[in-house]
Image 1: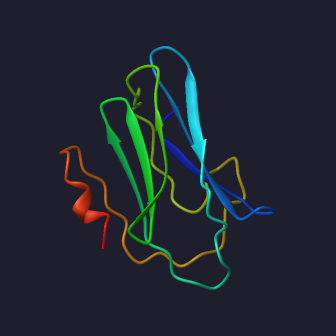
Image 2: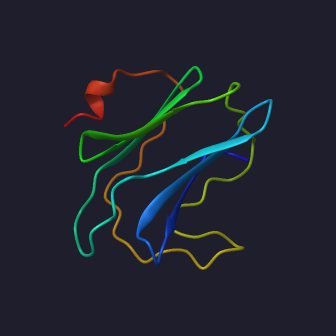
Length: 107
């Protein structure tokens, strides 16, 4: 499984899921996503640590039991062929292979 961010519509929280060479792992956001508000989300993978920042503030983090495994599959934003997705506004979506400092996530 490619690292994935899902929205639980009834709870309005984020689920982050990914696979490692050992097992499937994940974390859930602590923040309940407010309605009709712009949010700045940033997810950082550093070795075996995954951090989720919401509006520049660390929301949650997890230490994985192995390295994240990526696959060559397509990247879907909002919805995919199997899920109805979420209605939302998206301003910027950025992905990079190069590690960057957390300052980029901390507004």
